[in-house]
Amino acid sequence: MFLRRKAAGISWLAVFLGNPGARFENTRHNAGFMTADAIAKSSGVKIDRLKFNSLTAIADIGGERVLLMKPQTYMNLSGSAVRQAMHFYKVPLDKVLAVSDDVSMPPGKLRIRRSGSAGGHNGLKDIIEKCGGEMFPRIKIGVGASPDKNRDLRDWVLSQLSGEDKKLMEGAASGAAAALEAIVSRGIEAAMGEFN
Image (cartoon, rainbow, N blue to C red; front, side, top):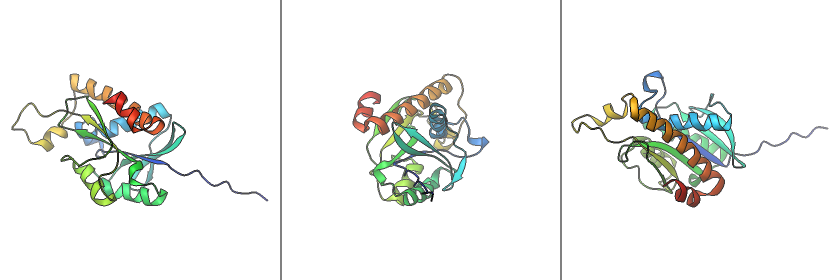
């Protein structure tokens, strides 16, 4: 008689915030998706399985099984995808790690936070509202404020990256991927000490 081996559970959800579709590729608001691509490359996985209204993959990071998620719901509805995955895998909120852009920080700067408010970010706001509160870690990637103070914020974050900003964001995405690995493998305090 053959015994079926029980599949190992997921210990972390890594949620990369962005908007799906070619129109939004290479924009400031897709800093999370850029980080997902960087971590997929370093982990040797492809984030291409459609589950929980997201493109997903399971990666082994620091001995932990991590579900990598690129929600396909658009930024403002990311919480629905996260809630589905949390319930399915029974992952607590403090093991949901969100990666997002942040206009209040200079381009390319990283900041790890243990928890906190949405800070005006609609993707984080939706996760907070739908998943049970603010007590989840996040990695914020600075995209800077528009140099034109009269420019609409939405227009700014959805504009295409080019030149020096593009180089900074590519470097920041790699740095955020390393920060995520540090959080999962060594803990948030160690990661904050290294990357903040």
